[in-house]
Length: 240
Image 1 (cartoon, rainbow, N blue to C red):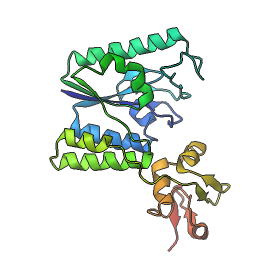
Image 2: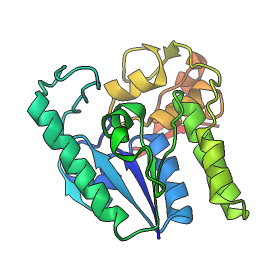
Image 3: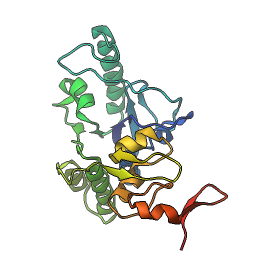
C-alpha cells in the first residue's frame, strides 16, 4: 500500500467542512489531490493545528499557525520548546503507525514541515520526502502534468521526479486588477486571493496570464469592465 501525505494550506474556506474542502482554496493542493487519487491508495493531510488527519475529517476554520524554524524554539505563534517537542512527537507517532501497515509513505510537504521531522526519517527506506516547487504556478503545472503522465502509464517514480525537479519558472509580476464593484488592486494573484476570499488564486493566475478574460468579475484588461455583467444566479459573464 502506498500513502501520500501533504501539508495544510494558509488559504482556507471560511466555514466548517472536510479538511480536503477546507484547503481546496489552494490550487496547488487541488492539483496534488488529483495525483494522489490516481497514483496512491490514499492520502493524509499534515496540519500544523490538527496533526495528521484524514481528508474527510471535519474541521473548523482557523488562523494559520506558523511553524518554528529548527534553529529556534519560539517565533510568532508563541511556540515553546515543550510545545514543539509535543507537536513533533504527535506527528512522528502517527507516521510510525502508518509505516507499520503500509509499504511506502511519500511526504509531499514543504521544508518547514520536513525540517522538523527529517532526523527521524531521512534514513528510513519506506519514507521519502518530495521537494516542493517554490513557485506556485510551476507546482500547479507540474502536478497536473504528473497526473497525466501517470494515467499514460509512466511510473510513479518518474512522475515524482518530474514534480520535484525544481524549476524557477517565470516569476509572477505585480499588476493591476480591476472589478466593477471593488477598488482596483495592484499586486500578485496570491495577495488578491488573500484579500478577497471568494476569489480563487489559480483562476486569477489564468486571468493574469491572459488565458481567461476574467474571474468572478476581476480582469486585467480594464476595457473589459464595460462588457461584464452579473446573472441572476450571481455568475459573472461577458456580453457578446
